[in-house]
Length: 380
Image (cartoon, rainbow, N blue to C red; front, side, top):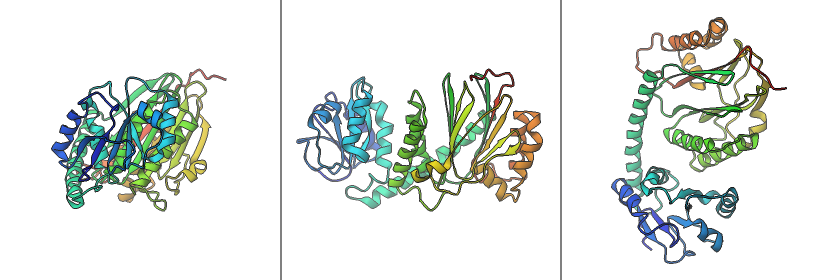
C-alpha cells in the first residue's frame, strides 16, 4: 500500500461504489497527499484511517491497530451498536458516517480530521504539511474575527423566553487567539448552558464539534454531562491542547436548570463568576479541566421565583482586570440589578469598551442573564 501522505482505506462494504470519489476530489484540492484507497485485506497494518461499515465491524470483530477508524452505516444505527464499536476501538474511533446522505455533506468533517495534529505528519513531507496547516489556521483566524464582528453587530443583545425563564445574553469580540463560545440546549423540561474560554483556535474548533454532539442527546443527565466533559478532555489532551497544571488553557462552565422544579446543577472550571440577585456566588476554581476534579467542580441549588442569576465569563473578568478595574463588575451588577437585564448588560459592556481605542476588546467577553418569572409554577 502507498504510505505517502494520509490514506483513507475503505472496506468493500463501507459504502456504495464511487461514494468516496467526491470527498477525495474535494480534499485533494487543499491536501494533495490525501487519498482514498480500497482495502485488499481488512487485517493488514494501515498507516492511515480505516473506513469500515458497521456490518464489517460487527462480523469481523478484530483489526490490527489502525491510526483511526471511521464507521459507516446507512440510515439507522442503535445505541447498542455504537457502544459495541466504542468497546472495540476505544480512542481510535473517530466517528460515524451515514452513507445514505450525500458524500459531500461529510467533506468538512474529513477536513477537520486531516487538520488535527495527531493525523498530520503520518507520512512524508511533515514540514510542508505543518506549513500548510499554518496557512489554513491563519485564514481561519481572519474568518473567525470577521464572524465575531458580524455577530456583535447583528446580535447585540439576545433574548429568549423559555417557559417561565427569561434568558438574555450579550457578547463582545476580542482579538486574542482562541475565544469564547456558548451553547444553549433546551426542551420542554430543561435548559443546559455551556460556556467555554479557550486560548487556541484549534481548541475552540474541537469544543464546537463536541457542542454539536451534545445537542443530539434527548435527555441530559449528570452522567451525560460527565461523558461530554470526558470526551472533550480526552481529545484536547491527545492533541496537547490542555495542561493539567494550567487551568487557563481551557475554561468551562456548564449549568443545567430543571424548568419544572427550578433545581439546578453544574460544573465550574476556571475564572467565570456567578451572581444571584446582585451578590457574587462563586469564587474562581483554580483546578484545571480534568475528570479527577468533577466532584470538586460540581455545584447545585434551587432558583426561587423572581431570582436573577448572572454569569460573567473569564474573558469579561480578564478585560476588566486589564483596565485595572477588577471590582467594577461586582459594583455594576449590584447597583444595576434592580433596573432589569438590558440595563445591567448594557452597562457592563459600556464600561468594558469605555476608552478602548481598538475595534475589539483584548479578550472575548460573554455575559448571560437568567431570570425566573415571579409567578412561575413550581413543581413540588
